[in-house]
Length: 410
Image 1 (cartoon, rainbow, N blue to C red):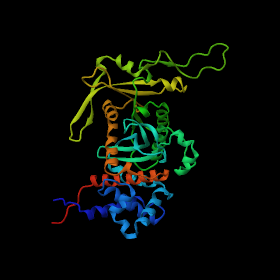
Image 2 (cartoon, helix red, strand yellow):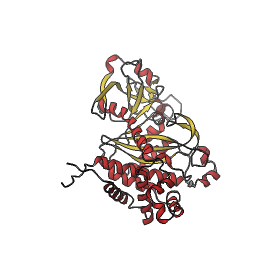
Image 3 (cartoon, rainbow, N blue to C red):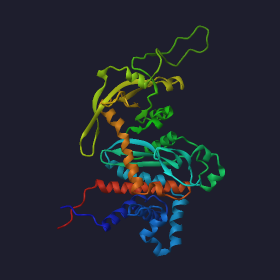
Image 4 (spheres, helix red, strand yellow):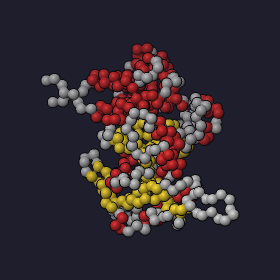
């Protein structure tokens, strides 16, 4: 009969896990503070900010409140350790255990009072569902059939912050940090993680990223597959389109080199509305935690995104257009573009299209259990250090759930 792990067993396992993933931090005190902080994130407590965490752990009673707080605060806010080192070590250890199916890009809001926390301003947050005073963090997660795991975090810095030298100085934002869109931050995170020893997979993202033509083009140029949501107004050339380079007009400059379509582009909604009924297939698209298989109706066809051709003057690049038309709805509800191979089976495309929502489970645990949104510091490094250590706590708990419980002797 499998034994029940004791609190001492968990603490011992946690200490060994953290010691392994922070082994590349340069200083012993950094490694010690990392273990303390991660333990505080995992142990019970409504608030996971620094001071109440240290009190719960009893650290303050050993060296004094002020000394303990200042030492760990310096480790978080000012110590120059690289958070990517910790996240990479977690990913390389845990991601191979997940049976990775996709990498998901998303962003989440961190409500804040005041104006001094880096990147905070009134801006739209999907977390809040409205415009509010908040920070926005972009993240990439490996999603597997067994669990999921963050692969990286970047704090979005609005243009108003990038141009404000005094606020940058107070928040200790490095000089080399310049304005980047959320999609550009996501591309950087994906590019970094693709150099690690972790299982690769297609990138999934919502419309905020999928509508960004440069995001899709960059992923494709980097050799990354994707299945990303796009708006119903996205314009494409339908499957019957023929592209040809026009002949040179007599006496007019250089000969044309860009292929031109034989018809006008249409919205994805219009293309799908014109499809005959037999093009809509009932496909399995999700397996629930209880093992039930959900199905829905999908259409899959090969198209060419118009923006790339018309605005960027690039050669036509075929993509999958995936559309979902659930039963009991009057029209298709969702659309995706994908650069996966023409030989990709329909069920795989349907499942990937519907898989992105699982990132919400990650955010729920990271915030609800591990204090992702509890960091109260006002430094750029502090935010990234905190998210790296929250990732470490999440990775430990994930590994614990995946590993079978050892048999205890009778």
